[in-house]
Image 1 (cartoon, one colour):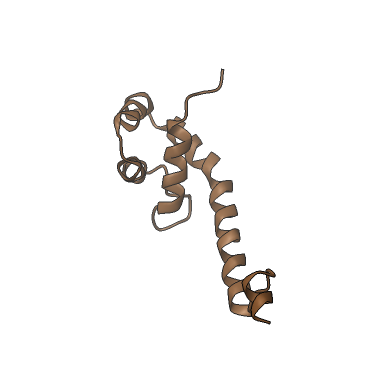
Image 2: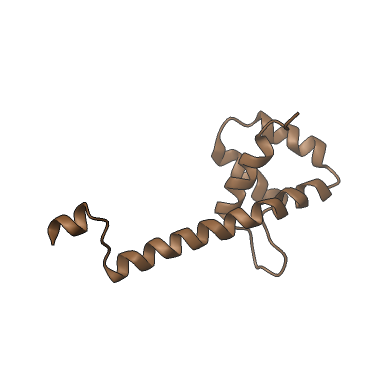
Amino acid sequence: MIVGFSQGGWYTGGSAERLAQQRADGAVIDALVPICVSQSKLDPDMTAKIEQLLAMKSSYEQRDFVIKSGWATMPATDGPNRDLASKCADALAKPAAT
């Protein structure tokens, strides 16, 4: 039984639930990234803000910048989502495909 749980891929009910919740949360964040990017494009100061974002070296600074800009706050929510802000900052910092 020990081998089954450690190497066989078996999970306890609680472990399986946590894993499922983590995967669901990640999928929701991935689905919201395009909305965050769209919100950045609607910002009248987008060009200047993207330049500021790209000048930041730390991913934490970039995440906080996206939060302060309001791009990671989804409609009908009370506040920004930090995980969404991180992924959105990553997406905005990527060079555009040519």
